[in-house]
Image 1: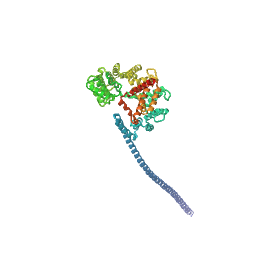
Image 2 (image 1 turned 180 degrees about the vertical axis):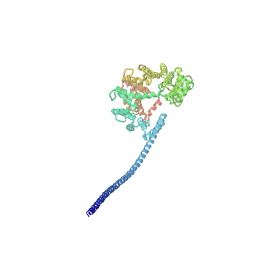
Image 3 (image 1 turned 90 degrees about the vertical axis):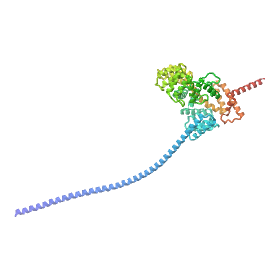
Image 4 (image 1 turned 90 degrees about the horizontal axis):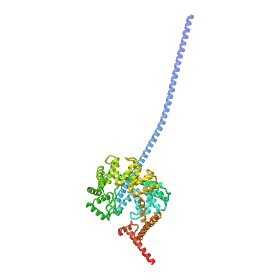
Length: 575
């Protein structure tokens, strides 16, 4: 029994153990399931929480984005509005600018038309038409036209002189940067015309005028520093001012590369063209034309020259010039051939620029030993016009022309040695040829001599000599007359001011006493006649008609009459 009971107990224990093991397994599985389920729930909770948060964030973001979009759209609308306004404003500004440009262009056109009419005017009526155009252009803001109007008011070119209005216009123009206005105000201040006499102010105006490019202001400042007028005398400063003017003129002369017209020299006749008279009498001109048509070769050349440059009151007429030159050349005139070469070298309406034709006529003249023709060929070779540049040939022709005394050729030789063009630089030879040319009044030769003295090139430096040479050069170019002509027109409008200026001239130079005395005599005579004849002084130089009525020397006649009366009175007094 014992083995059986033992076996049963073992089976019971084994069954319990198996159940316990299964129960443990089940519990373990359950626990694992519970943990898995718990993890899954936690994950879901976390995911849901994350999703919710993300949704909330998205809502916030969307809300913000919507707000931003709304603001952006509003901003875009605002910008669009601003852009529209800006566009409108821009269009408006563009329209204004276009209108201003049109107005400016129209003003420029009117000014150019006025200048053209003024240059071609032969009567007071035509001049008046020109000033009407200037007035219209000035009204459109054209500064150059305003300058013309201011000058007209100052000098009485419109019939009535109004210095006050002229000064107001000059002051406006000066603020706009007009150097001409600065110069005018300087002149008026220096003499106390229509404004306070103030030399310091005048100096400021002249300084601004010179800085702006006024050659006249440069000239005046040069003279003031040279003579020590209201400034410390300083030759170097004077030289600098004169140099600027001389450089400007010399640059224009050098750019032309032309051949200055030979002075008209005729045979000695009672009314020859080489006289000092500025205007050729019409009857004499007709007489010379008649003789020229009859075959007077010298007169043909002379009339050709006068028409070429427009001298002695004759209009510049290239067709007439070429006509007379061709007639003279056909008759064998070497000068005429040379001038035809010059016309074709420079080119104009009658003779279009043609280097080959220029070479032909210069050669014809040179073969006859003509200095102008030889110089012309030298220029063609020197500048390479129609022929290759050949300094050796240029030198040869310049030397031949210089030997014949042609000053332009002498200058060219001087320039070649000065600049080293085709030859070794030789300042002594340069000085020699410049000096020779300057003796005949060749302006560029005088200019380069001044340069040599100013810089001490080839000569001992001398500021004073350099200034003197520059003044001589400017006199040759008629620049010295600028200031004189500017100042002399006003005194004729103002007798008292004229007296003052003449007195100043007498004080400046003892040699001026006698000329000033006679000038004052004439002035007083004019003043007396004005009072007697009740001339309207606002009319433009009515009293000048005396020249036409009594002849150009009426003033000498009157002075002689006055002197005779004084002698007669003195004789009676001492009796």
